Length: 385
Image (cartoon, rainbow, N blue to C red; front, side, top):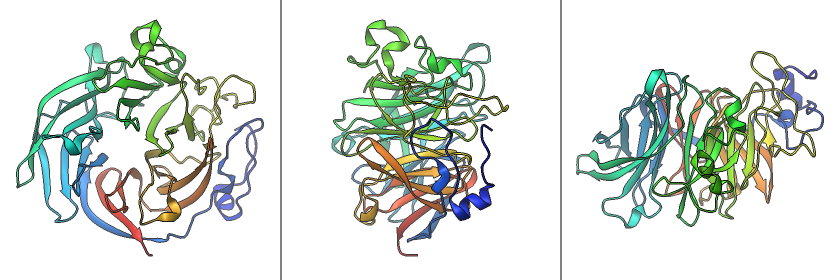
C-alpha cells in the first residue's frame, strides 16, 4: 500500500481516509452503509445467474446462467420457462460461460424479437475468448422457447486463462450501435495494445462489424472496433438519458472504478491505477497531465468488485432518477452513484448480505437484483422498508 489508512470498520464508522496523492475522482473515504428505503421481495433462485433483461413490452425476464442455460421468469404470473434450443455451446469455468443478454433496440416491434447473447467459447490450444451473437426468439404458451437462426457476430481475440472476459452489452440511445466491453484477460499489456480487441470498450454495428467513425477505424483489424482502451475487467456498461456512456470495472487490488467513457480515450490500465497489483507491486497513481483518463469514482482502500449497471429512469424511486445503480460482489452491496454532467459522486451503499451480480429496471420502475452463485436469488426492490 502507498499510504496508511484506517481499518475498514473504522472507515465505515468515521468515513475518514486519505485519497492517494495526485488522483482525481472520489475515493471510498465517505462510504458508509445507508439505511434502506426500499422493501425487498425474493422470488426464484437460479444456478450461477449472470445477467438478465426484460423482453420489451412484457413483464418477462430472461436470465442467463453461467453454465450455459437461459431461463425465463414471468414476473406477473411466476411462470418459469427456458430457451431449450439454439443457445451456443459455452466454455464454462472460472469466470467463463454464458454472459450478457439484451434485446434488439426495436424488439418490441419485431415478430419474432431478436435476442443478443455473449458467452465464452473455446479456441485452439487451450485458448478461449468472449463472443457475441444473436438469434430470433420464439416461445410457446408454456414458456418453452428457442433461438432460431442464431449467428455469431463478433469474437474476442483468444488467449489462455479463464478470467476478465468483460462482455457487457449496451445499445446506443439511437439504437444504431452496440457498445461492448472486452476485458484484458488478466494479461495486463493487451489493454494498451491496439492490435487486439482486449482491455477495451468497442463500438460495433448491429451485425457485429466495426463501426465507421471509430477513432482507430482506419487502422483496420481489431483496432477498428475500439472506442476506448486501457480497461481491466469492465462488468458494467450503460447509457444515461443524456447520451453519456458510463462504465465500471474491477480494477486491481483496491482500484475498482466508475468512468465516463469517451471516444478514443485511454483509461490507463495497467500503466496507472488508483489500486495496486494483487502481488503487492505498486502501480503509479493517476496524476494530472499524465495523458490518461482518471476515474470519476473509485474505491480505496476497500474492494467493491462491481458487477451489473443501470441508469435508473423509473417512477417508483424519483430520488434515484439519473443515478447509476451497480451491484457489488466483494462488498455484498447495492450502490448508487450520482452523476452530475461529466462528474459523479458516491451517494448510497446498501448492504445486501450477499454478492450482487446483476441489476435491472422493471417496466413499472421496480429494481430487480440477482444474487451471485449457486442458488442466487432474484430480488425485487420497491419503495418501503
